[in-house]
Length: 88
Image 1 (cartoon, helix red, strand yellow):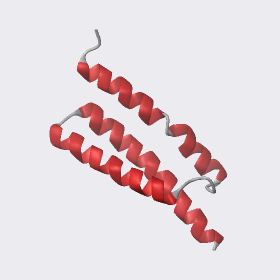
Image 2 (cartoon, rainbow, N blue to C red):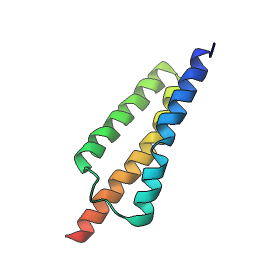
Image 3 (cartoon, rainbow, N blue to C red):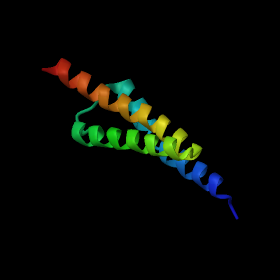
Image 4 (cartoon, rainbow, N blue to C red):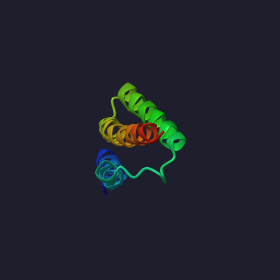
């Protein structure tokens, strides 16, 4: 049986790593047409709140996963906003 912390680390790793290809593609191509700024804005705030929640509980799987996901999601969001602003 997998200990709870390791189950958390595994789940966190998989969900966090799923953002890496999108972040890299967005940075490389600057193609943001199909990305919703509202969705990524709400998602980024939600991830920040999950990070705060994990911090308050001192739960490292939640803290690490959401810190990394926050950086990736914010990178995509900022790229979206910058590219759209330049296009105007």
